[in-house]
Amino acid sequence: MTRPAHRFFTQHALTGEILAHDLPLYDVEYGPELNGPGSFKGKLSPRFARSFPEAVDPGNTLLYVERDGHLRWGGILWQASPQGHVLSLEAAGWSSYLQHRHDVHGELNARGPYTNADPCKVIRDIWEYAQSLPDSDLGITVDPTTSTAKVGTPAQPLHFSWWETPVLGDAIDDLVKADDSPDYTCDTAWTPDGHITRRIRLAYPRLGARRTDVSFSTGINILDAPPVDRSADQYANTVIATGAGEGRSQRRHIDSVRDGRLRMEAVLALPGVKGTDILAKRAAADRTRRQVLGNVDKVQIRADHPAAPLGAFQVGDDVPVSIHNDWIDYTGWSRITGWTVHPGGDGGEAVTVDLARADTYHYGPADT
Image (cartoon, rainbow, N blue to C red; front, side, top):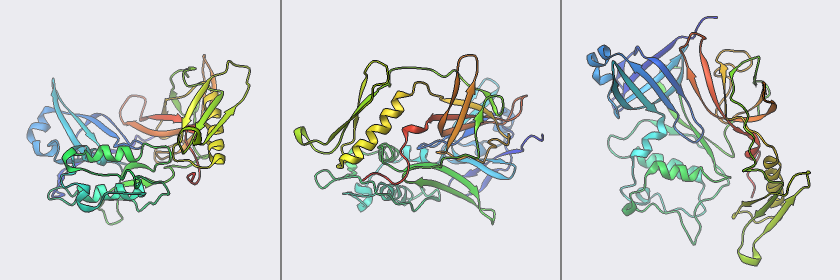
């Protein structure tokens, strides 16, 4: 099998000028992330770094990964650190820029405050504000996604107060933290006319889909899988779901089963839920999830195996995972929360896929 061709190139963040068309990087790792920027690591020889220092200027250079003609990753170079006889590079995806930006006007320059606002709109407003000031437009677009989630109330509007110098990246982290919040990931691609799109993929109620056409299995495409740890720290066969209201007027539902194990309880706080039927559904789902002991955090797969070739799955997808080893026979659904591509290596290209329990997520329209 022919090894995929990788090309690494850099671009000036403001002018768009291509600084290096083909950086001779090695020991490269890169990949995206759910609700985060994703990351890149690589190494460069001192000879090239000294000859073209502007090509690896931290904080002012955009770095891209092209694999067999497809743009697979893009982000901002943040570190260029000499270590012995190599220059180690570290970059992060587009949303990392907002960790270095603040609201210096207050209320995102009259875009806020927000009451019963769609968090998708607030996310777009944050990016619009961040790129509206001089020397700050990275050409990043945010999907026009809408949601039924709400942030800010008449009693407590969502404010951006300039005297608190809010970090814009932290604000977006808060907006995607709640159970019924939208998801995002950073994306980079070629356009048909050869330009580069830098995009925030925004989805609600969640990124990804439940996939039956890809899978991760030992003996097929999994190269390495850690042991499946079993812990009772999060186990519960009784879930107490609490909803809207306070004191005696608070909505509550208890979902409990006798399963031959010691009774264990957990509280599921859903302060925005007013319907008892919704509480019952969410409590049952959480109890079912908590009753399963064992979880797969990551697997390493072959990058081009037909069971799940790189490019066939996306951040947020649910995929069936099957692990059989000396310790356990495990089969279950896992959600892809990111991955790291390792282009080099004697064994060929490999991908380390980060996973989370798929049943910790809610599917379909958001509960109201």
